[in-house]
Every structure is written in structure tokens, then in C-alpha cells.
Length: 141
Length: 90
Image (tube, rainbow over all chains, first blue to last red; front, side, top):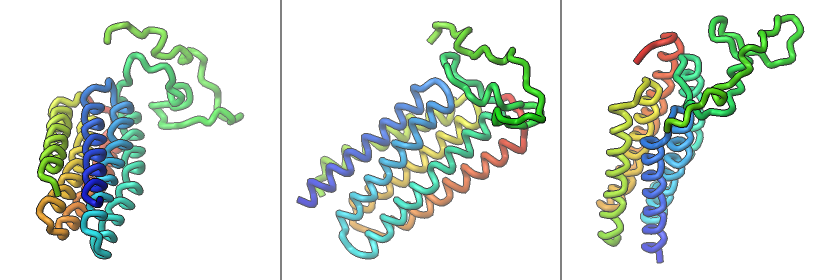
């Protein structure tokens, strides 16, 4: 019984990791790649650690496996947020099929200033940056 | 533990590792490579768990803990480096 449970958890976890790897190789730009790797990579590791906990079934091992899971679940979103933020500031290009980029109209790359849209004292930017990349999306890929 | 399942899981994780390494080698920008490195570290942590089951030595879990920790620190460090460095062309 335990063997079936452990086998199923291992296979599902490995399949999720394989899915994350396929996503990182197939998706077109950095945020979509992070979308693939962060969530399913963390879930795959968590499932494999749950399998380890069920297989050994000792207090010390279960505690360590749960520690790994808690650590991954806490740190994976933080790391993804920090890398995504840094990549946007550095200017990594988005996919040309991107239809929504909220930061594009409210973030100023020169002054590093992010407007919320509710300020009165800061002069509004001209609406020239309204046109998004979707307008000039080419059916290339 | 059935050897068939263990071998299959090892195979899947190895293919995932290979795909992650391809993105690490050819990723057009530095953040792509950082994301690929994080995925590789996470896959290796999973592989360590599978190896702990395969050998029956539970001490391998400490390796998984350390791997997860250092991968997180590396990601934070690379992000700080990127934000300090400004626009780049790689």
C-alpha cells in the first residue's frame, strides 16, 4: 500500500518537473518561463519530498522533508518575484504577442519612478505610450 | 521499492535536467539563465530525494535542504547584481 502511494507521488512529482523543463524550453519569454518553472518545479519537489516522508515514516525524516517543503514554498515565490522585477528593470524584451503590460504606462525607466495613477503633483505622461506591443504584433511565431 | 518506478523517475528527471541545461546554455538573457539555474537546482533536490529512497539512506535529505537554500541565495544575489548593473546586452 505504501509502495503504491510512494510510487504515485514520485511519478507525479517527476512528471511535474518534466513539465516545468518543457515549459522553460518551449515558452517564448522570461515571465512565461518563470510561470512554468516556479509553480510546477516547486510542486514537483514538494511531492517527491512527501514521497520520501511516506517511504521512511520516521519522525526525523518526516521533519526534514517537511522542512524542505516549507523552505521551497516560502522561497520560490520570493525568488521569482525578485528575478522578474530585476529583469523588467534591466529591459529584457517581452514576447511580441504580449497584450497586457501594466507597468509600461506607469513605470518610467529613466527616473525609476512607478506611478500609481492617483497622484496630483506629478505631471502625467503623454498618452503616446498607450499603444501596446499587441498593435504591432507580427504573426511570426 | 520497485526498481521500475525508480528507473522511470530517474529517466524523467534526467530529461528535465537536460532541457533545463539547454535553456541555461542558450538562454538569450542573463535572467533566463538564472531561472534555468533555479530550475536545475530544484530538479537536483528532487533527484536527491529519489536517491534517498533508492539507497535507503535518509541522510541525503540534508543535501536537499542545503541545495534549496543555496539556490535561493544565488537567485537573490543574481537579482541584486542585475538591478545594480543597469541595462546590458547579453
